[in-house]
Image (cartoon, rainbow, N blue to C red; front, side):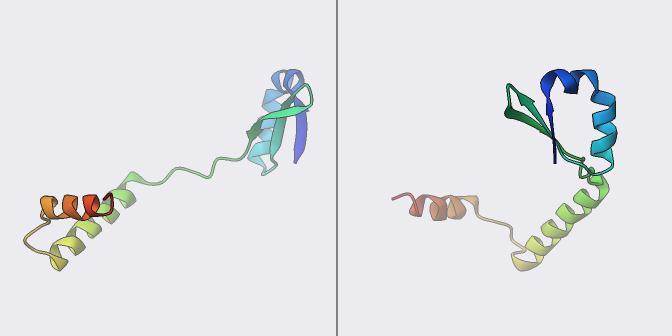
Amino acid sequence: MRKVGAFEAKNTFGTLLELVESGEEIVITRHGKPVARMIREAGSKDAGVAKAAAEGIRELAKSIRPEGFDWLEWKGFRDEGRR
């Protein structure tokens, strides 16, 4: 983990991005105190995969309880724990 002052980070931002892209973690400091952390982006998830997973959950719920959920019943379960 590399520590870099804010002024240096401003002047070498492109280089810091290359370091982060290669997997290094950068901590940006101001007056010696950490204020920010640069880490590599984990990557975005495919929206199609998320939609397919949600649809799978809906289908599973329908197979377990085909008549659907009684929301008043569920609200009662929720409120039961609040008493």
